[in-house]
Every structure is written in structure tokens, then in C-alpha cells.
Image (tube, rainbow over all chains, first blue to last red; front, side):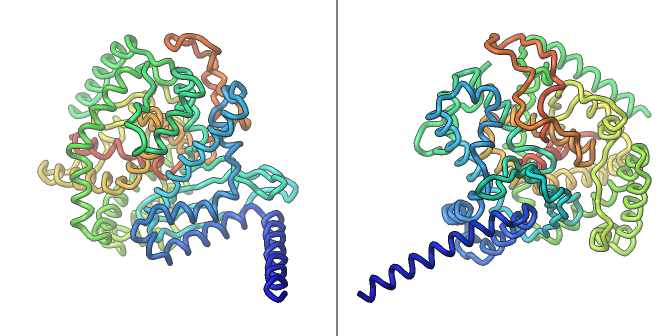
Length: 215
Length: 284
């Protein structure tokens, strides 16, 4: 009797936390969200001895848990694929999104792994409270160099604010993949692009596939 | 003076060569008519970097402790602030010029000949300007993308700017020549060392490193010309210049300008400076 009651109570509590959590994420202003997530992740990385020693798997798990829920990968993928997006079947779209997501997470974890105590400067949000499409500006300040700007393009969605593009130093991630994807699709179709991304994401699984489309 | 003439002559020669080779092998991107030549140069640079640049930079980073490397970085960054200030003046931003030159004054004195970036500590922020950006500010478009041997990514406009940057570079004007060469090599090595993480990220991120770096360069330069706030095209507009199933070669691109510019990775950003790295040492 008792254990069952405890389980129920625990489940109810967990549900309450989840609801409260998502409600909070929905209400949270986009700039506050970016700041909180950034500081939390950096703090966790610095405290984690395994990650400090170079445990990539653990770092990726951390990113999956803390960062990814705030990204709209479908929007990022469709935007990077551009006009060819409509030619893909629903199933291809899902696989493309999945592969692109993996690639971005790997790259992101690589960038985070080289983080070493730089200072963040969270800029005040320049937007009206009614705006549903905003850009959150963050800068990384470093001695002897111009600060590196990181701009998050975010959109208000039913589940809270979601990032649909990241620009680092003015370079849009999504735009930067557009030509690469386009070349790949022109050379070997949507399936070819999915295959190339998959090979890139699983370097050990397959022999090296030439990434460069042959002209 | 002779130096400048020599540099200009060499630039023109290589431009001609680029044009000739480029016509033969066009990849179809309107921004990159000399793609064949550029890819060849890119492979050459990559090979050079694998054999010399990266190993030297890696050794540099493992031998010198971080504060020493910072001092080297700050020292050369301080010298650069002089012309950064001048470029800001040419771009009609006198307030930024005041900041740049105040930085130079503080860092050269309190900052022990530029070894310590005290100016940043007291809130005088560093800027990134060069003649290519100044021309861009004046309305000059990028022109064709070019990859130079050792110098790396550039464009017609930025190459013209580079001629000025290099000819006016205090480090490259320094006498005697032996000191000048030593300083140039130190500067280049330090820059390459700062980019070690970035180049690793590029390897992981790019499907086609050449395309990835080219597009990052063009985006980055555009952002720099507008000091981080370039006008943005509407969201999710697919590339307007693409024409349906035309064969890959010979594509007219009438609306190159309509390419969406929503202006990735620290990698991309920092790689832009990579080209200049070894270049600066060979400039003399």
C-alpha cells in the first residue's frame, strides 16, 4: 500500500515540476532564457571533471538535455536546405533534420570544449513585448581581440521561445550550410545529402566519403 | 615606394592568372567565378598548413604558457590599433577613432609597450577594421572571391584593401630586416596558434571545407563592413539565384544580390583571420 502511494505522490510531484518548468520556459523572456541556459551550461561544464578531461559523450549528453530543447531544428534544417525542402518526402525531412541536428550538436560540443573562461556580455534585448521574432545578442569578451558576437534568432512558439538560427561573428550557421547542401543535392539528390551527412556523423562506421561534390 | 609597386604588380599578375584559370573551370557560383583556381590554391594552402603552419603553431602553444601568448597577441594587436583608428576615421566614425587611439596610448604606456591590454579592462573596446572594410563602407562591393597562396580567403575589394594594409603595416616596415622577419613570423605563428581550436571545429562542421570557408568569409566580411549590423533579408527565402534543373555548369545568376544574407561557430569567424596568418610573414 505504502510504496504505491509514494510512487503516485512522486509521479504527481514530477508532473507538477514538469508543468511548472514548461510554464516558466514559456513565460521567460528570450534574452533571460539565453542567459540562464548559457550560464548554467558553462557552470556545469566547469564543474564536471570528466568533461574537463575531454569526455565528449558526457558533454553531448549535457547539451542534449540543457540546450537542445530550446532549438527548432526543423526550422533550421528547412532553412538550410532552402528551396529543395519541398521536394523532400516527410520521411526524408525527418531524416535530414535528424542528421543535421547531430552534426550541429557535434560541432557545438567541439566549440564548447574549447571554452576557457572567457567573459560573457549579455546585451539588453531590443524588442517590444509583443514581438514574436527577436534576436538575442551575446558577446564573448576577450583580451587583445574584438569581442565575438553570438546572435540567436528566436521565434515565439507554443512551447516557448525557440532558436532558429545562430550567427557567430555575423556568420549564420543556417546560411553557411545552404550552399553546401545545395551543391550536394544537385550532385546526388536529397538521398545523397542524407548519406553524406550520415557519413560525416559516423566517421568510424563507413569508409571516408568524399564530402566535396565533384563538379 | 618600390615595395608598393612590386606588390601591385604581383597582385595584377595573379589576378590575370586567376581569371585565365578560372574561366576554364567554373563551379557555377556567381560569387566565385574563379572556383577552379581558388580550389587549387586552397589545397596548396591546406597542404602548407598541414606540413608547416599547424605543427609550428601546435609547438608554439605547447611550449609557451598562456600569459606569454597573450602578451604576444596584445603586442601586435596594439600596433594594429593605429591603422584601425585611421580606418575608422576614413569611415566617418571619429568617436571610434578616439577609442582606438586612446587604446594605443594606454596600452603602449601603462600596458608596457602593448604587452597588456589594459584598455579593454577599463572599457575601451577593441575594433576590427582594415582598408577592405573601409572600401566596403564607401560602397564598393566584394567582387569575385579569391584565394591567395598563403594569404588565403579574399575578394577583389579586400585584395585591394590588403595592398594598403600590407604596405602600411608598421611591423613590415620595421628595420632591420632580420627583426622585421622575426616579428612577422612570431605574429603569424601566434595567430595560427589562436586558431587551432577553430580549425578543428571547421574540420568537424564542414561537408566541403572550401565552400564552408568561402561562405563564412563572405558572410563575415559583410558583417564587418556593417560593424555587426548588416541589413538582413527576409527569413527563409530560398536562394533566388538558383535556377531549377539547369546543368551544373554555366549558370547565369542574374539575382546574385537577392541571396539571403541572414548573416556559425566561432570556428568560421576566427578562420577568417587564419589566411592572413602566414601571409603576413611572407608579405615582406
